[in-house]
Image (cartoon, rainbow, N blue to C red; front, side, top):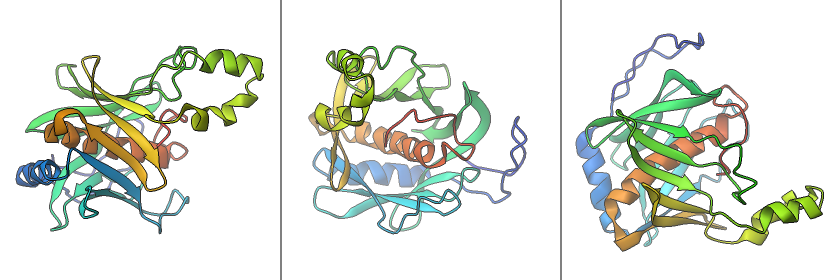
Length: 240
């Protein structure tokens, strides 16, 4: 994936520098995840600022504590990169000018094929007890590749009604882990737990391919969370 400056359909000015993903780096990322024990943790850099104009980084850390890759966010208009310790980019996510109900869709390349990373908007998510709307990777033909989905907790909606929605401040802690499920074609293939260290992604059967896809989708989730108020989207869809 290469990124070249231009103007999106919304008129957003884009930078002119080229940033390219390296297929060999993507393969190296998968190999590193193979040795990570079936899981990784996405940790925000302690120096990150809430200021949307400041760059942000998130480290992908293996079970032994070594950094496998780093997610770099420069601004809402710059490509998002997933970079190995040697400086090569395993993934580059770029704005294409496409939006889902006002929320930015980012393009990337996965296993040599173009994909889109995007939110899945649902008007019934909270009614079904989901604490966050799904995000997903889809292929060029619309095929589903991987999704982050909040578990359906049937007690959430009645609890919010009884507490006149004031309970919304409590449900995240009350829900516990897992916070999200990893699914492929509606089949669970892993889960995401929240801890003091960050977000821990666990793949079923220690599948490194699923972990690699999860790194890409986590990069999109962090982008949206960082820039929802700065042209990255239209509201708090993901809770990373």
